[in-house]
Image (tube, one colour):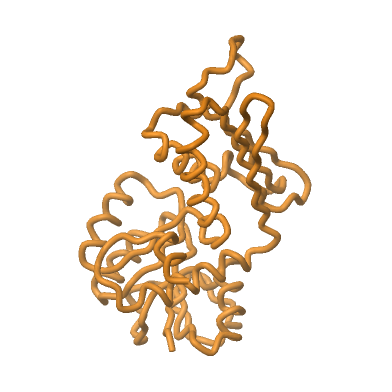
Length: 253
């Protein structure tokens, strides 16, 4: 049985994960950490990480950047592996994550979906073949009209995977409205759509002469991210200190 502390337990993802774990015979949420507690959780909720005195095997974090510093201190002190799902961390915080990962296992990913992380591996393979052949690469992401950031963190992660496979040759282009010139072969366009109730959608286009290849992922609910986070938590228990990502989880599936 994997005993989980849910950091950000009162948030939307925290609640989705709690509901999922209730049906999982191999996992249990033993405590939550959140500044807000609605009193409806089946486990104790602490307003500060330092107040949590419940024995556990791993922490799952879906909170916000302002809470990550205290969480890292807590996880390091308790020697607890950490599944870090919070995005938009500062450069200083990312450096801190790297330092703490020398003492505990930390799994960090911009997207916890097993599908997205499988696509990342596909993109790396496709880029190594199609980029040298001169194919243009574009990413189009679509989300509902309530999403605040653009482009999405996942779109950037996909672009980074492509660029890594291409040895960093690509320049990310987010806006062509002020450019009056032909498309450069080493630009990677990233476009964002915000409208209605569109579910999170990411489409990667490889376009060559008379040929179009499209890889597409659609997230219809938050449960796919919850499932990935729980699988990551189970994977991380007992791992040596270090920085892991979802590709490590997929290898063991």
